[in-house]
Image (tube, rainbow, N blue to C red; front, side, top):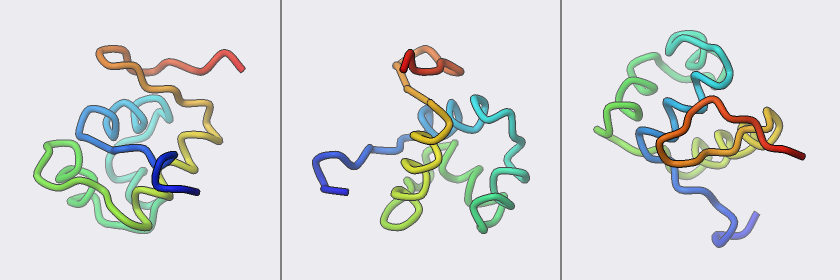
Length: 79
């Protein structure tokens, strides 16, 4: 994956992905191998996912057919 293709994961996008997947913060943390607090910090904008976390979120989003559009969560791509 090139840097140009790497998505920027802001708080709204992280929350929208989690909601698209139908997971609680704790469930998402368990799936990603992180703490619930980390998910919360991403969703409140305290921190942004970076490095491997950002890459993993992108992979999960692509496999789940998640396509983020500002102001619209829970949308699936029309592929």
